[in-house]
Image (cartoon, rainbow, N blue to C red; front, side, top):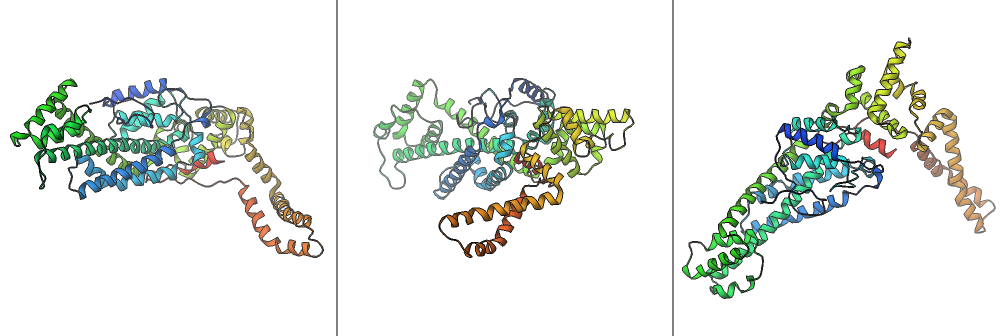
Length: 480
């Protein structure tokens, strides 16, 4: 059986499957992976996964229809075929979930690999790829937590990456199922050809038997697929002695290739058993992904959360408040060049200094510098550069209600002025222009108000769920 070789998703159809690791070896592999994975300085220049996802969806649907047809035609199918036939809806659900949970803005912000076979893809995708390969697609919650912890002993992951672990695992499992489906379909086609040749040689279903030398004429110079050989041998053994020359021809053909019928049959049976196990593991893992509470997995893995829990009452806060802290840390890290963990530790250090200097109870909390009145001073300390969109929002808040109304008034004037200027250029004037302006005042006011409302910063809470969808906060942060 072929060993797995890491490659880009669009390349070799080998399964994402390598040597099966126990816990200790898996942790060591995670550490060595963290050391070996360079990250590009420009994450937005990465490779896209959405097209491959759509292609995988189409390929899996075609494979599903192929199994359906084989069942209708009463052709031989394998246990892996049955798994795909019975659980195709599970794969469909995973693809739909990835589409919902991976907006382009969030994907662009994920750190991308700067080298290796998965160069240009998100680092978290490479982590999921390695985990799936060395567990034969069998997801285990505790094993995953230990794997992530071992990786972060060498290289911390960002908040966004940890939220994207579930998405990355889904994508890799979908990719692996597509590769398995391709192998299943190829083997089924080869097996069907073996059946057709056996039918000719045996003269079944009212056909006249064809002489072996005639039936085998078109196969002399071809490479025989293993599934074809196995099916042909299964059909011809213990049959009429008149077809025995076909088996002799088969032995000779395989001997030329340096193998034998027995070796091919044994290898094909091993491949089929391994494929059945992998497909079963993929489907089981897909179901488990949708059942796990990924918010708890995230908070168990996040080094930022661990730092805040150790130095404050962060753990006693409700989830929306904790998530507000994390969103602030993500934003401050992006705008300052510091890592998220460094930003968290600096906020903790600022709270300690306030405690040593007799500051108020509020000033002795990290949240004071992340989301409260100490934010501006903390931004100066870490060299935070306010993005233009945030600068507009801050200016709007400083101006208060007067600024908000003023902004709507300016927008309303622009919306009305542009068409009126155009009409005036066409020669329309007199009382007509004021009348049109009056008629357009109501819809223009609605449009200006809507645009003014959207210009204000969004402060929505998280949208995490135990169904496997990752928290919406990180998605909103990258969209901003």
